[in-house]
Amino acid sequence: MSGQPYSYVVKVGGREYSVQVIPLDATRFKVIVEGFEIEVAVGSRQGQVGATTPVPATPTPTTVPKATTAAPAEVGRPSGSPAAPATPTSAPQPQVPQQPTRPAAAPVAPAGAVEAPIPGKVLKVLVNVGDTVSPGQLVATLESMKMEVQVFSSRGGRVREVRVRPGDFVNVGDPIIVLE
Image 1 (cartoon, rainbow, N blue to C red):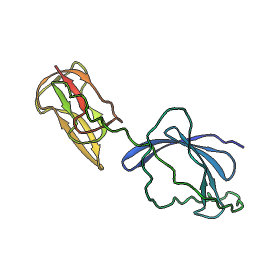
Image 2 (image 1 turned 30 degrees about the vertical axis):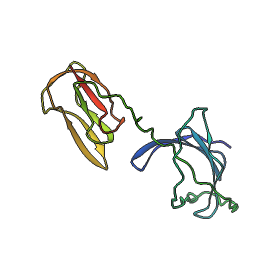
Image 3 (image 1 turned 90 degrees about the vertical axis):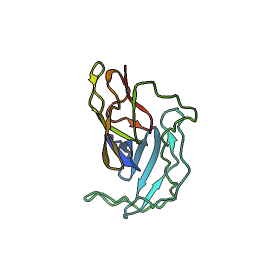
């Protein structure tokens, strides 16, 4: 009895992950997180969770961080659902793909670039290619550590490139826009 898949966006440690949950039967679910597949079994008592070894859903290589100690997730039976027999299983810690890091010899931002002052998520880009920007003009808004950070142009010019979109993640020094 496979059910309809449910899609979620889950925020863990400030990073968003696309998660798809597919019911297999009353107590088992297939969970796909950023290309990694894991089968989860939910017992009849709250807190009982079992999982099989994660398997990539697609044959794309992904870096995985070192295992960390974390509190086990508590998954309970939804109210009104039938009780299932308790079958405790050992559950390996799920591994979350690590965000790619900037290479040691990262390319230098082009001349005239307005760069990200902090790492974060792009909330708004307030200029388009061809717009004229004045020194000190607000060009983008980032979110970092639950705070909104405004990014201002340090010089004037015409926008040649917009390098980011809302939802993108940037590191310190990443170009947001490039001015002529």
